[in-house]
Image (cartoon, rainbow over all chains, first blue to last red):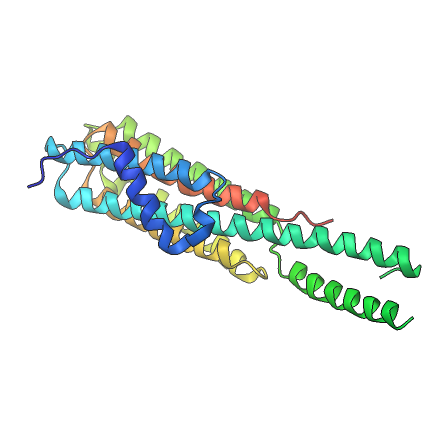
Length: 111
Length: 144
C-alpha cells in the first residue's frame, strides 16, 4: 500500500501534463479555466484519499467518487477546447468585418 | 484594373470562407441555460438534503428515488434539445458527461453516505461540471 500522501501541486501538475496530450499547444495558452478546475479536482481527490485512508469510505465508494472526478477533468478539457474554438471564430468574424469595410471603401460596393 | 478585379475576387472568396466558418458557430440558447440551471438546482437540493440527513435513516437511497427520476427527466429534455441544435458538438459532449456523472452519483448513493465530507467533495465536482457547461453556454454568440 502506498503511504505517500498526494500533494496538491504534484497532482494538479500531473493532471495538466496528462491534459497536454489532448490540448497540445492550446494548453500553453489556457485562459485559466481548466487550470482552476484541475486544482479544485485535485483538492477533491486528496480529500477522497484521506477519507479512504482513515476508513471513512470503502475502496468501492472511493472508486465511484474518482469516476466522477475523472468526468470533471474531461469536462474541464472539453470546455477549454470549446472556448478556444469560439475565440478563434470570433477573430475570424472580426477579420471578415475588416475585409468587408476595406473592399467596400475601395470599390464602393457593399458585400 | 486587372489587379483590382483580382483583389475583389480574393476578397470575396475570403468573405465566403469566413462567412461559412461563422455560420458554424453554436448560438446561445436561453432554454438550455434555464434547463441546466433547473437541473443544478434539483441536484443541489438532493445533496443538501442528503447532507442534512447524514447519520439518519432518512438518507437512504430509496427515499430519494423520486428526486433522481425528476433530475433524469429534465436531463433527458436538455440532452434532446442540445443535440437538436446545430453545431453544438461541445455542448453535446458536455451533457453526455454530466448524465454519466449523475448516474454515477445515483450509483454512489446506493452504496451509502456516512459523512459530510463525502457529499461536499462530490458536490464540488458536480458544481465544477455545471459551471463549465454554463460558462460555455454563456460564451456562445447571442442571436442578433
